[in-house]
Image: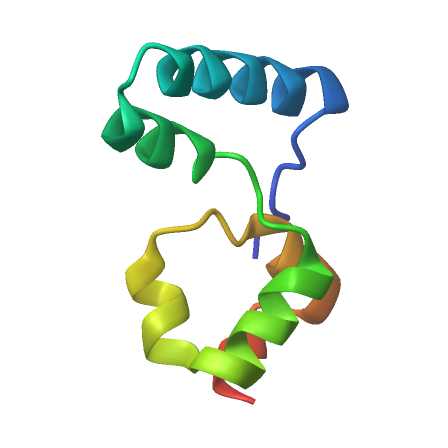
Length: 78
């Protein structure tokens, strides 16, 4: 199984900067769509899963690649 590609800090910051520009321009939908392309930190993904549930986490559309890399590809079903 291929390993999940991790995003560099520079890539994450670039997404954050572009997302903040969208927010500042009043494009909250664009902000929300773009910010979710950056990986959710694994500790937050774990809390989200425990508090809100797997279905809602998946439905949220967040990039979960770092959580998968840390917890394993089957972490959502555990």
